[in-house]
Image 1 (tube, rainbow over the protein chains, first blue to last red):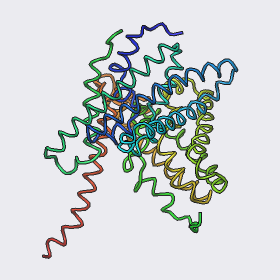
Image 2 (image 1 turned 120 degrees about the vertical axis):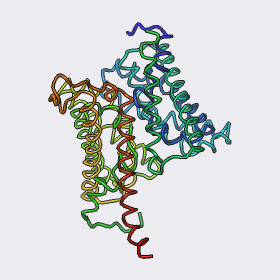
Image 3 (image 1 turned 90 degrees about the horizontal axis):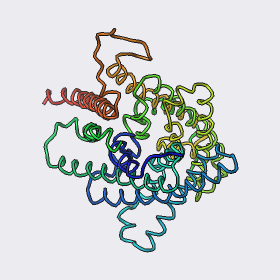
Image 4 (image 1 turned 90 degrees about the vertical axis):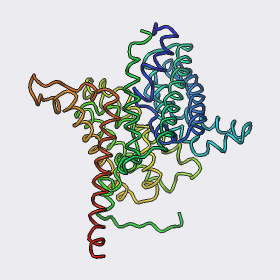
Length: 193
Length: 215
């Protein structure tokens, strides 16, 4: 059982070991959906919500798997749970907030293949977090994801207005920006320890 | 399924993944492992081979089963098939080399959510005969491994002054530590993309210039 305090887990997941900028998880939406601030925020929130749901499910499932001694099925079970959780979120949103559902569009189902979600479920298992720790870890990871994608979207909106050499247009400049953001987040290493 | 399948295997079936539609440099798919495990050439190679195996095996199986998978649940089926092969790779690497397994960490299991594999399953393996799917998957896998090596080699040479673990420059070399840190991954991939874009634009200009002179 891990003994880290809850505040350490949270800060660690938000800043020092930010899922996107330090662990390279969830890069596809990070590069794909970060063009505009008003699509980046709903995407971040949806991801965070799926993270919370799948973290709880993954914790429960892992308990069941361990008690039956069938851990080798973990990966398949997790991915099935995440896919159903995404489906659940999609149906709930469609029912209660059709506007938001339309604006998220294709991004919602794509959360299934967002490695940040599966990564979170795997990491909390490897680190042997208990239920509350897992929940806080998921919250921190979600906040970190929102932070990274918002920063990136803000920078790219500014970039639209500036003149650049033609070869840097496209993905290359986003990656360079990501590199600079990642460098600055390295400054948080050791925080909360 | 009414569309007639094109059964001819050409050189393009194999080579499109190598260069023209390279999954990393052109399509920007499967970014997470690309950046995360390429801090040394040997890790990059192992990751590339593991991904190639999963790509090949899942491509073959999905292509064989393509007429019996119901359309509504195909994505879930693909994911379960891919997850099965990833579990096999995960345990195999653990048995072969524990050091390598620890270095790659959770990223072996994260091959499941590599968009490239699911993308190939959906766009290619589910529509073509097994032989053709295998050839294409092999090309894609080699292209992916090549891209990983491009990054891994640069990052290891600059960041640690070595290649595949062999010291290159002797003790007086001051390593650029940033290259093996996360930021280096972003920067090196960005630099490769810039280089390719520059080459592409130079080629386009070279094709245009003779026309301009005759005018």
